[in-house]
Image 1 (tube, rainbow, N blue to C red):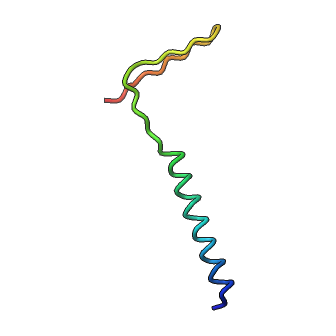
Image 2 (image 1 turned 90 degrees about the vertical axis):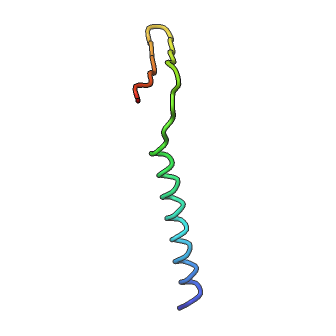
Length: 53
């Protein structure tokens, strides 16, 4: 194989691995909320509750 072809294939593999790992981290983040949080601004009222067991 040509050296340029090997470098191209390795570069594509590295880019795919980086894209997969960052996408996985973005979509599978799970935070634990210990208590209820409330945000109020004008008529907007947001309450975040932890309903997990």
